[in-house]
Image (cartoon, rainbow, N blue to C red; front, side, top):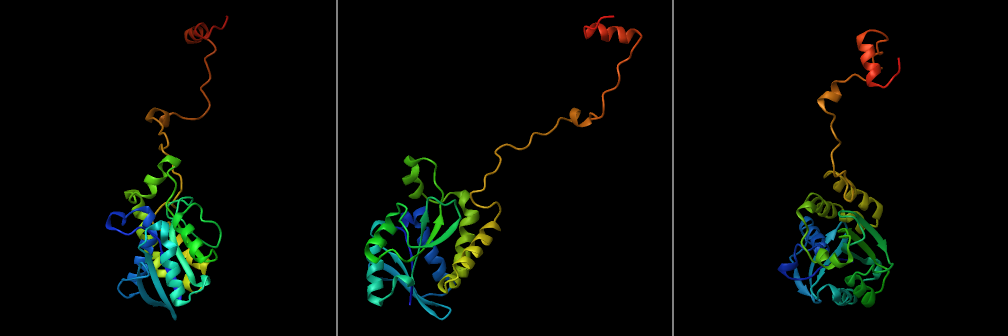
Amino acid sequence: MLLIAGLGNPGQQYERHRHNVGFMAADAIARRHSFSSWSKKFNALVAEGRLGGEKVLLIKPQTFMNLSGQAIGEAMRFYKIDLDDLIVFYDELDLAPGKLRIKTGGGSGGHNGIKSIDAHCGKDYRRVRIGIGHPGDKARVNAHVLGDFAKADQPWLEPMLDAVADNIAMLAEGDESGFMNRISLAVKGTGAEPGEKRDSKPAKKQSHIRQARQKGPAAPLPESGPMAAMLKKLLGQKE
């Protein structure tokens, strides 16, 4: 049995927060693969279904982010699920918006939900990190994480969640590289790749006069006559 956890905070007021992108991923998977309705168990919302030939339990801890490990640990012990069979989706500040990366084990990166899971369950599970970007100022991190996704995020957010749901069976079967490639292709198809920098100013256009000017060699100056005398006077040349 496989346990897929999406991290977030319970409550309608948190639904569209960047911190709740793990919940969003779990919801997308449940809808796409016709999982059972969400029910309350283990201090969490759980839904059951299958991905290919694998039985899967989706879980959204309702203990608030900082205690996510309590609910996940309880479910793992009840079903006797090994760490190898745990996959966790969550938000990552240190990835550009829309980037997705997978790793097994490692540090929490300061994420309180991951800290809690590490403490209650161990560290050697698969972590699917979904980039939400960094606001650039440490003082603005809380407001950024606990704020709704911006309008500018919508072009990549929904396609990425759809791609996660469409291709989750690849991840369940252990094809992590293939899964990440599918997500990357889906997000690139929405326009500029997330995190790509664009020039803030358009290229300066030439004036109509400059466009009309020929770029060939300058015409030779006259060597004699009234015009030559006037030019020599203007240019300070001696007779």
